[in-house]
Amino acid sequence: MEPPFSEGDLALIVDPRGREYLQTLGREKVFQSHMGHLAHDAIIGCSSGSRLNTHTGHQLIGLRPTLGQYVMNMKRTSQIIYPKDVGPILVYGDIYPGATVVEAGIGSGALTLALLRAVGDSGRVTTYEVREDLAKMGVRNVEGFMPGVTNFELRA
Image (cartoon, rainbow, N blue to C red):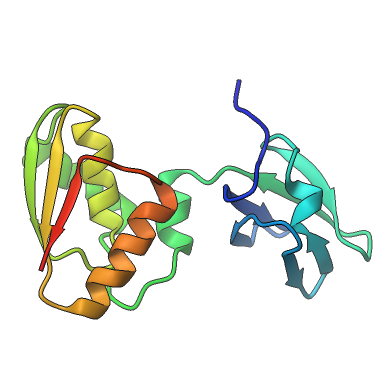
């Protein structure tokens, strides 16, 4: 069973129409939308799938984002490799647990995250990026979904 949400965790807030809002939980932070506001403190301590009410009484759901949801909702300035394309890349690239992968360009980090998941703890991903702005954003996105990842290296 998953532990309840805690400070620093990613939460995906879903409204009744299915719109998704990615949040990094923090004490005294507030999620605001057209349906009202919801204090992060009200989410912290709840389990994934909990129903949450805004100050105006609108009901939202708090979930832990999947990799696909994270990729589609993360901040980015470059084009991403979409989840529908990741599968064929992993299969045709023969990416498996324990593999060492060299990636050309981190971009926003979407493919990097999928590669890290595929190689597992025993594998390694080394990414080369020439643009400093993309390197910073990509690393921020990777660390946002996989905090403390140790089998990843970025080279500029």
